[in-house]
Image 1 (cartoon, rainbow, N blue to C red):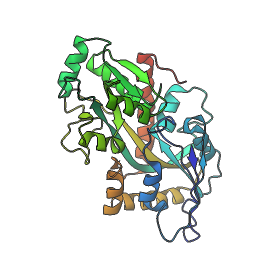
Image 2 (image 1 turned 90 degrees about the vertical axis):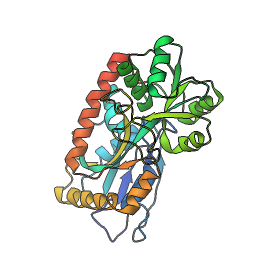
Image 3 (image 1 turned 120 degrees about the vertical axis):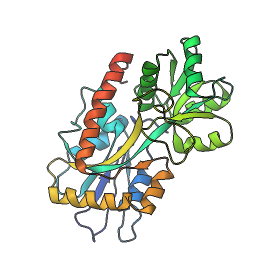
Image 4 (image 1 turned 30 degrees about the vertical axis):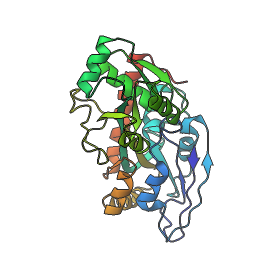
Length: 312
């Protein structure tokens, strides 16, 4: 899925077209709310700019990424690069039409959205240690849902299972909303779920939240420890969203875009907009994004190889 964002005449070097591959391997419901992310960094709701958005579906978001890669490097096309289009896809798809490093120049991170590990309340586990003990006592009995084979949530759960030393059964769905329905009704035992849509069910007691999957605690669920804090040192998995431009774009334009994005991410309005989506803003230099992409490609390629996961 891709969006095109048309910006104003008053900011000629700021993106006139922003193509936004819908994230998380294109699985419906497993997205980083990229439209809200665009709005929060000032490429959306600014009154001085006029915008037109279109959606282009296909190829798990890779069509939109490929369009950005092949666009003219004139500063008028900005892409939304996600953990899916630039890390998971590259980890699992040897025939991508674009290279996530060579064909793009990084502008900067927008933010990361960890998962929340939720259980059906009937499961007798009140914390991560009890869940791991239960899974070890009944190998292969507990199941978990995701938004499809090779989705980021699938890889994140397999990473958890490997590091915890447990055997749990994957049940792939076409969307996270479908798996969430089965979680609530008790057909599924557990799931690494996106935070924002899970909050109402957690607060209503329909699901039990144990931990979040990021490096730090989540503002929307501050009482929950991270997986690492709960006993699995070094564990981290998150949906991240960033801005990229076609390779060859002027460093002057990239510097200006990076500065404007960071200014908004460091503002109270920008922070609040992302926190409302369960995301943590990550202002920083363009180079940090390249490091993140390289690291995640290696990380998820290793997880997929060990678990025998192949892209559909």
